[in-house]
Image 1: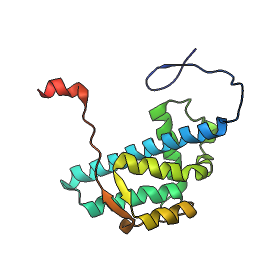
Image 2 (image 1 turned 180 degrees about the vertical axis):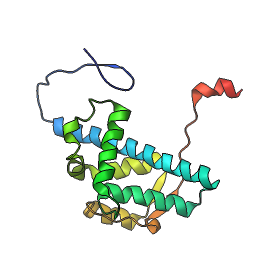
Image 3 (image 1 turned 60 degrees about the vertical axis):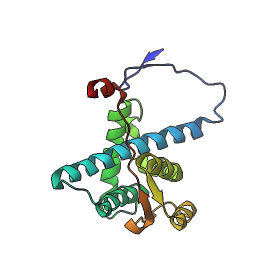
Image 4 (image 1 turned 120 degrees about the vertical axis):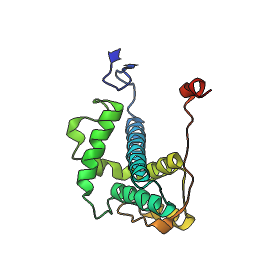
Length: 172
């Protein structure tokens, strides 16, 4: 057993596997999940900041922010994409523990993520309650790298609200 460096300080088992058949696919799945969850957290923090600062958050503003994050991940943003991916790497390590992504992978994270963009989009949209137009999905699936999202691509945003069970008794 290895007392991991994870944020939850949960014991983690590790060792050799008898076959490496699924190792690459499992690693891609885990990487996609970590990228999706960390990007969701960044997006929600940005949305919260705008809502608090301006006391309102219009749907158009939400769409602009969401498209900005999507374009950073596909690499099509005019913003500093590499800088975002460095921050994303740090965010993943902060969120999932230092052993989740080795420091040496910082510069290659963007390149490694190209194979999981489709998975990322599916998870990101489901976690944030985003519905994309069908023709956009078809275009994205056929060529996800450097895909440019615009606000008109987002058909519907229905924010997902999780109720905190621990605060239920306090609320009563």
